[in-house]
Length: 407
Image 1: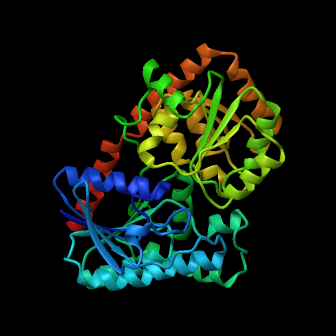
Image 2 (image 1 turned 180 degrees about the horizontal axis):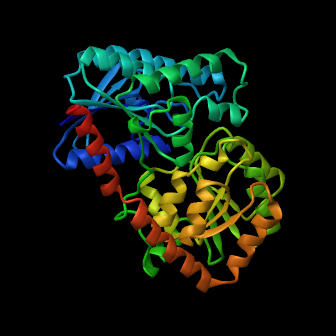
């Protein structure tokens, strides 16, 4: 097949969407399919386009067998909603124009985050005469309203709700990536036969439990001592409750807290670490994704702390899947789908969202129980092997694409 991926995010960007789509594109290309990616100039999460891509309207490159076509986008370090919308709408326009000159694919995979890219997907579906497989990783604008990023009565939310409803109806098939997203899609578009739940995946060969030598080398490379180390990796957005994590750090001075990532709360976190003089907190900034196995090799536990919002129950963070594959147990302030997964698999410890005492106590208990850490880590790896194989996930996407082509 010739598969066209339409996505605003793609490697070398390091966000969850870029990593996930890059992995799927590489896997399908390695299986012999012709894979083209239509994407923007890399700039996520800091809003800065790397020098090698600046001043270019169009570029073409090959990444591990994938034909990557990039288009100009407006990029800005500003975290204001206006700057983000300009970034998204610029990609919508330039991708829609560039797509006119691409060879006709057999199927178009459209990543719906950000939502407005679906308008370009609908346009290219008609121009290129190819069916659309719409991948929904986030309920937007619902999540933006839930986290307080946008007001429910704002014009952009009203417009986005109309686009969301149209996009679901226009797609040939929809993939939802969590049960919460699945429920949300079906609430808007109640056609079970056109919606399939496929959760995130992980490369089980790259993300695996480290040997003792690999663990020692990883901790040395990050300049960590022998103390108990917990890691929060990934996007520092309003989805997460960093007040809770930093309060746990203040209460547990003998535990090393490591943050890797960037996002809208990154500057606030840096300010809090300085203001509170949290000497046991290490801020690594944004790391290339290829460095993540090293980070997890150095970790004793993975941290997840969701903020108390209405979509929290349907959230399954990508960091959770990767840390589990590396045999790292999770301490999670979480509810709903994520809590059920951790509890059923025995992959870690869950606490109520917002409960600082319970969260700090859960970390403290693990610091004194190495045998329990090992048991939880082994259970986490078994769950990842059973539920999140990248090869199995790629096969399910491929089956849906083939069904669309022959429909």
